[in-house]
Length: 211
Image (cartoon, rainbow, N blue to C red; front, side):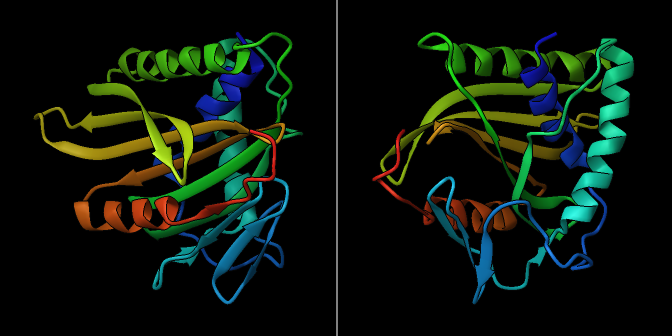
């Protein structure tokens, strides 16, 4: 199984089980900085304002969660998962069900269109993994323009056995400046969904960087 697919799947699915975050790390992300509640990533050329009242999820918490998900995926896939190049950017949450996670990883296309093809495989695998684990889910894909940039978007709705919606997930993905940049959101209500979407859609990208 493609290593990039496994790692993207790990990040996406692991959002379900992120523990309540506290600022228990001197450096809550691998790249970037926060000043006056504004996060800036120089590598991506991205600036985002953290919503008021939302807590930063520490790098320590994200890495603990990665380790649990990594072991599960290695067992099911039969392959070693190399997480060494994955970077946690800004992540924040309102509670255990409503959270925002962003990541980046160096990505070099060997052939034009490789990144798009990989993204399609990721989306198919995410959906199939839920089905294989007996989780009822619906999914759809689209293109969204955010600050003039086209992102691949993937939407998942997860249901309880009685048919009630228990969780929604959105994944945004784009190759930016030589990095596979991803933003993942979990939400269980429209108000918190709006807060996260507004924060992301109002964020800024440095147009001088390569797309």
